[in-house]
Image 1 (tube, rainbow, N blue to C red):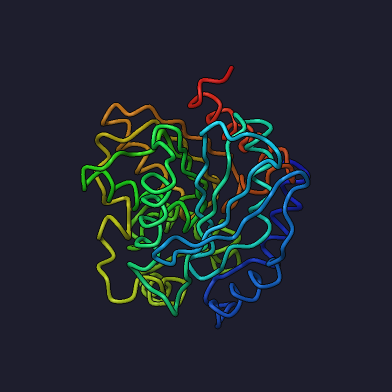
Image 2 (image 1 turned 90 degrees about the horizontal axis):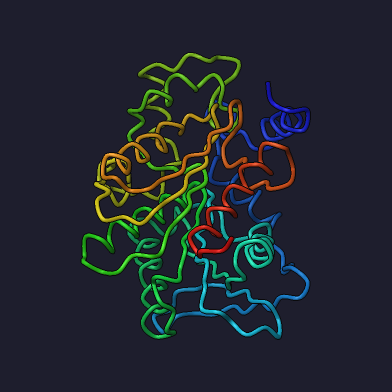
Length: 317
């Protein structure tokens, strides 16, 4: 059973954030509407926010503690939203927790162009451009950078790391993924078995997934960022990637997610390569519950595990 607050959060998320195609004919419009409502200029007190662009035009935001000398540590974060929703204020609060509880890093957020107007490989190209700008022009050292991302942002994080590794480039010190969206084929077991449990993408009233429903879902606009690309390309579906030479990683995921196996498959691949990996799964929790931070006991626990992972990677007791 989820906690009382966890149960309330499940109810609210189901009422406001269910994107099942049978109840949401215009999923792109709904995501953009929700994202638009959350757009603001708020950021934590005592921090400075700078909106910038790389020389190639990639947009990003940089948050750092005002009047504090940087220590070289950096969290590079990729936001979620099915590649459809934009960067909004909710994410900036992460920077405060990172700073005070995880080694005083600066935080940078990629503000990538969104689908359906911009499709693959736009977002991957922008992520790589920002990585190269930070590590080559701005002088941040890869071994001092930790990547973070939720949902589509975790997809982008994994794709970028695979690309960097494949190109023989340095990888970051580590990375954490919150409810990674990593399989665009719908071939996993939990894509079927959790369809009647997933409060955001499933259908609690008609809980049985079948081939017809699967094909309708895969053809829906929730996957619009793919365009005409191959869904089994590891840079689109990282579950198809190989994970040798990766740094230590952490994953959090909800037990009721249709995407649960996306995380478990990658965790298994990392372990088979003897890569240190932590996997935090809370039963009966929903997509990106961890990102709610203090909203429920489950999210608080998992978020604190993420912060602890960052401290460990930065060798902070």
